[in-house]
Length: 83
Image (cartoon, rainbow, N blue to C red; front, top):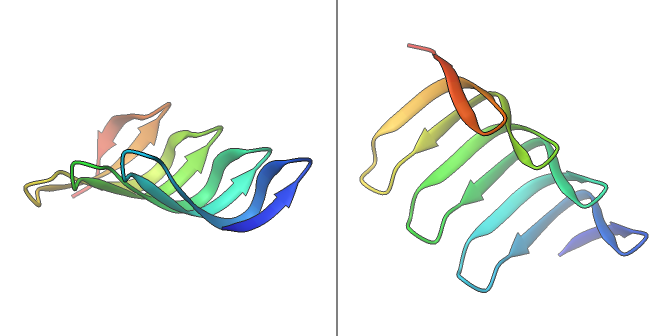
């Protein structure tokens, strides 16, 4: 659900994958970009900044057990934990 441009998600919207994972947030050129929330099928989630379809910038990853890690992410990996 959301805005489309040239057949790709653009602007604000939500995508639901067949495995039950969801992303709600900003899209650019069909990729997750800006601020958004990705909920994994496992119950884990990431809320924060995205660039080029990967976690990039400040965000919080919460595993399926509820343990949260607030960090700076680069290319989908935590590079600096924020307390």
